[in-house]
Length: 203
Image (tube, rainbow, N blue to C red; front, side):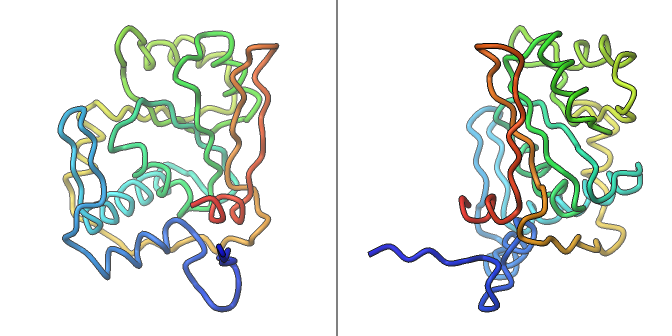
């Protein structure tokens, strides 16, 4: 028989991705947590938490706050789970973008969700993500910030020590945590809303 634990019950405080990561970083700080064969990327639980804290503090410095939609456009790489939890830690809304989207669908998703920032890979294979976003940026009035995982500015943020203590957003179970868009095969991509409780029940 399978028992489902309600992550928002009084019996557990591990009810957000950030709290769950912090728990395992304290329990197994030096244990390998992330392995991406592409680029031979590896990260321990402590390294993952430190990277999340650095990115969350940088996003906060740039004005990202609870309730702000933040897009993530990247292939499978170690920065993806770092960004995912950093966005969540601030109470911002994760908007993962299908890596196959091009100009029209990409513009629709970023405009429809009213993202204030996007974190992305500069390019992947034949897809020039940074160039595509820059080209449509003038048509996206809500988009204030484009953060490139592959430039020197991002690398500098990741190299510096954690300079302050992160104040984690306190989520309520039914609070909107992510907007996930359909592939758009029968029309414009449609946004499906996912609350924090739903994310943790599927974790």
